[in-house]
Image (tube, rainbow, N blue to C red; front, side, top):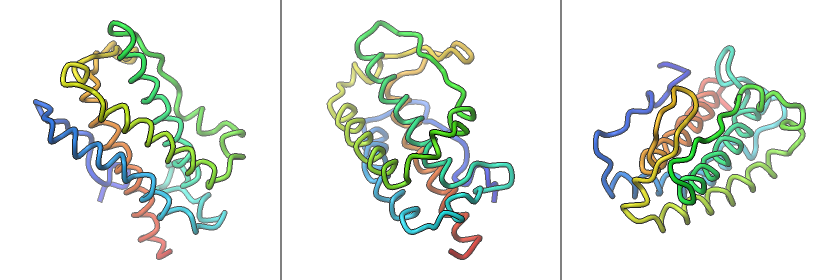
Length: 174
C-alpha cells in the first residue's frame, strides 16, 4: 500500500454528474463525524505520531484539514461572487508547522471542521448546475477549476486524510 496515497490519487471523471456531486456532498457531510471517531480518544503521543515517515502527525493532519477546507469555503465564495477570480495559494507545510496551529486543541479543531463542513455542504447543496460550472484560477500552474470539480476534490481530500489516520491506527494497533 502507498502510505502517501492510501485511496489513490485524485482521479476526477471526464464529466461530472449530479450523482458525483451528491456522493461527494455525502462524503463531505459525514466526514467530520468520521474524523472525530478516529482521533477523539488518541492521547498526545498518538496525536503527535506521523502517519508515515516524513509525513505529518495526526495532530498536524487535523489542523491541515481545517486550514485547507477553510480555503475551499473561501474559494467557493470567491467563484460565486466574482468572475473567474484568481485565488491565493498558501504554503500548507508552513501553515501546519506554525506554533499556534498546534496550540488549538483537537476538540476545538474538530468542532471547527464540523461547522465548516456544515456551511460548505449547505453552499454546495444550494448550487445550480450553472453555478457548479463557475470557476476560479489557481495560481499554481494558472489552472482554471470549476466548483463542481472542487466539490469532488475536497470530498477526495477528506477521505484521503481519513485513510492516513485509519491506516496508522491499524499499523500501530491502536
